[in-house]
Length: 316
Image 1 (cartoon, rainbow, N blue to C red):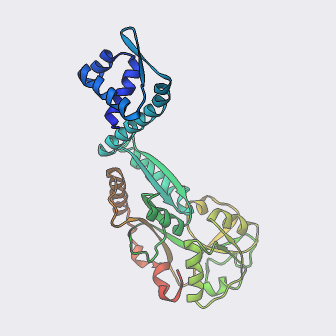
Image 2 (tube, rainbow, N blue to C red):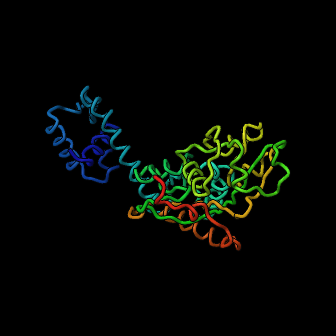
Image 3 (cartoon, rainbow, N blue to C red):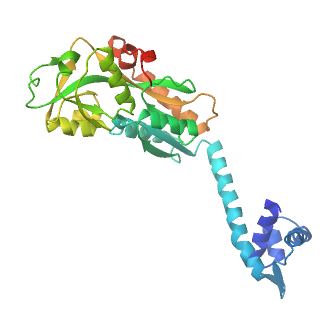
């Protein structure tokens, strides 16, 4: 049984006439008749009965048609999708961490889609922690991810965003009037932390060990919005990157870190040795170009979180 036979069978069933089907398929009527006869012989059952100058499906033919037309339509759909991808269209599956959900990802994707020729491209979005995003990229469920840096060697990394770290306190906190707070002073107060399985959770815990402090983490949270909400209600204070969510939040104080211009570098990452669809390659190239054009002139003065932590001391 071949795809051509299924296509021929479905067309004859549609027209109930060999001549009309052969003209539509651009094959001779004898060739079409032989193909259907061969299919019936292989199946061991008649698919059509004669009716005047045409044919109608037998009971077995109707059952066979229900499945055959699904196969034919699925093949057409796959073919059209492949043609679309070869012409630069298609779908891009991306994953990103919570701090990028407010503006960074929506703005960058929209600006990419607004470019001439990108109108038909589709995106799917998945939001989670860096380790989970990386697992989905490795399994092939995502094309590109945005998150923190890890020591995985099967991924390509490209820095796309730098976020300064700050300390946040509620309005009535004893540290509220200080412009700068040291890590040591910060660690003397109850802390609202990150989920320890997330990139930020792993690395802030490593940071505390590197600075030889042992803060009391009263609760762990999955994202910045939850942390901000708990800090505002005076459950503790927190160390977080300066995100879009922070800029829009009210009811908290924002402090610099005394003695450090500590920053969080966000990366775009994708599989090293996996051939990407043309549309994915174009998106990666666009993100690189956009980043080059927006390089922070003072980025060299920042101390990146991943650079002050000795990775061989921690189980990441």
